[in-house]
Amino acid sequence: MNQSLDARLLGRHFIIDQANEQGTISFFGIFYHFVANEPLKLGDEVVITAVTAEHLTVTKAESLLKF
Image (tube, rainbow, N blue to C red; front, side):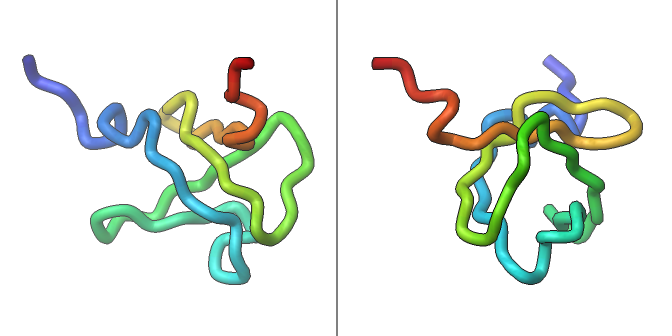
């Protein structure tokens, strides 16, 4: 199956830090813009949950936990 690099980012975790708090993140030398449906702060762990041509959508990892 041929899968794009962007689609392979789905499920990847990263931490919001000073380098990416403005909404950009770099993977494999490519810079991506990301957006979240809820406010993020430094130290939040996020997961990439969707990929579009315009941006990555991230969700707080704690929001994805099922109890």
